[in-house]
Image (cartoon, rainbow, N blue to C red; front, side, top):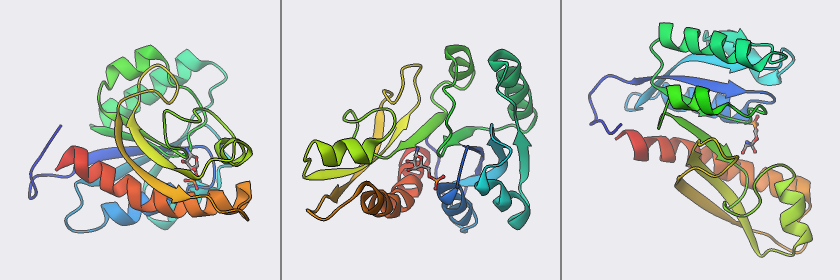
Length: 192
Ligand code: GRF
């Protein structure tokens, strides 16, 4: 997947389910001259996702996909992705688990950001669990997506110190700041 600077940007899609702060950050990154990606599509399984507002704001096409029937939903997305010649999928707070079949179609081209230092704290409520276990550090990870939840090859991580006064909320905020640095850096790492 490596490419050198000056080549065409990789056409990318960002999948979200909620706030979309990583989406916004990736859009800003993609708009930089030397960015290796362009964002061509926003996909959401949730029609109420706040992040969908960035579709209008930045004039990026959005697709809202109902996942009641997983197979139909994934087939619909796959068709759209092929049509738009998408070469990279960035999951950013996307709350659905993609099937093995879907992942096979985009093998090595789906990445995710997770709010913990994987392999620790896969799944949900990472900040709460890290604090409860009296961890000294937490952080975030960008990794390739495999069919096992939060288990694909790690691309990059960033650490955050957990202080005595941290709550899940304050830790989430601290980690999110790091996420916004990490995601672009990880994309550069795999594409440059
Ligand atoms: C982030 O913490 C990300 O690591 C996790 O979901 C959250 C999404 O936040 N996968 P946002 O919607 O990008 O603000």
